[in-house]
Image 1 (cartoon, one colour):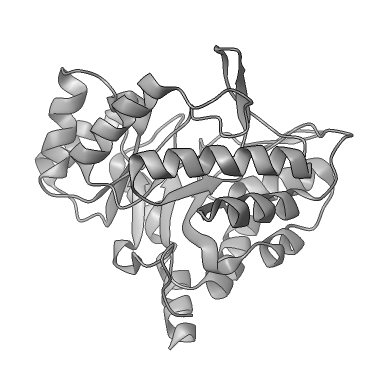
Image 2 (cartoon, helix red, strand yellow; image 1 turned 90 degrees about the horizontal axis):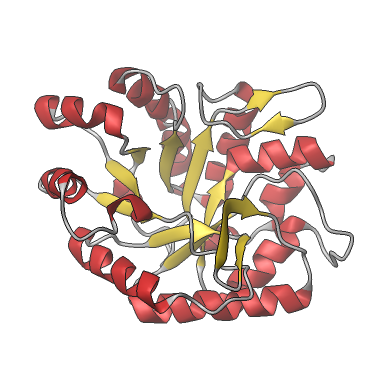
Length: 282
């Protein structure tokens, strides 16, 4: 599959999240890493150690920004002060795209600090798409929205989650950050076929993929990001790369974080699937 304006950064390859326990190792050893993903909010500050570390990372690595508080699905208008700080960081990092979650989490300026699932209605899709367009136009770079893991559903929904995701990104003319672990987690929690989800989203809009580990409990699965990727998620990733083509891929490991080398080795397992996708696209 040829590159398009959302997955055109095929040279990025495999990345990992930039996390505090690994700072010293990265700065001292300078490992070969395709790119680092940063949580934007951790660096939206006026100065200090976070920006000092970031600038040193930027001297030798590609960095892509990922947000956790835009809440595209909330009814509130975009926070202008937040956007100004975000744009300053975009200029600093030269991130080729920016991502955040397809969710809600704020009401009248009060923030839940959680990624809450949305009602999958046409009205919600239109409002969300408009908010994404406003953010994209202000920042001046492509935006990718990420599907979240969920543990509850709304009776008001008028379509499936993947139909809603497609409706939003088509309306916003934006990209998708496809989290295959979140698809698997939600499929088990809600009883749908994860391959129906993968086959139902517009592959030409997938600009980035997330992989991660999850935890199985008796009655549900939780998106924990605290251990290696499980086999069913790797199988979904294989299907996603074959359908979407070569796509920048990021391993998330955010709790009980092991050594840098262990995280990096787990991320590099994606290489064989990327190679297969690259071969199929020729």
